Length: 173
Ligand code: S3P
Image (cartoon, rainbow, N blue to C red):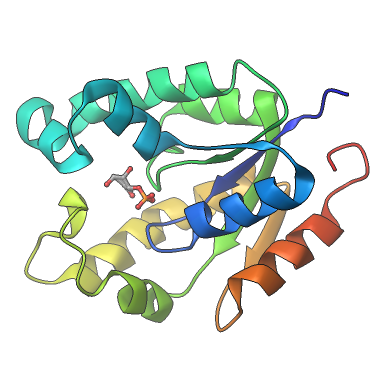
């Protein structure tokens, strides 16, 4: 049977890959992570793409990746935190899946990303400030796109994944 995709959106460090993986296993779906997909395609990591092609170059690759990943049904897809910025991507996500927003606090993000070296946008003097300004800009977009928004703080990944599955409409499960 063909099911609509389940698309996870939310900021860096909200647990999209971890939760997405669990949901996919439980529902026997294919799991795809947009950043991994881009890295596999290019053979280099995201930081390198930012270095060589700038953020714009990365965003172009991200749009292409989303188009490709969402050309099939039955998938659970973890998106990159900034994938919701382009209007074109927003339309695509809405059209191609059921959108779940992982709504995380700055503290939780900081805990998860404290030692991160892989995310170009966080290689700054004050990562907390960066996360705050990204969230201020993006949270309204996440909320506007979400079919389901879940708070992720202080919750075990497996519990959270089970809660999300419980809240999915019947035709998505
Ligand atoms: C980004 C988030 C990252 C990655 C890139 C840019 C962003 O993905 O796509 O570093 O703009 O928030 P995660 O949300 O998986 O960390």
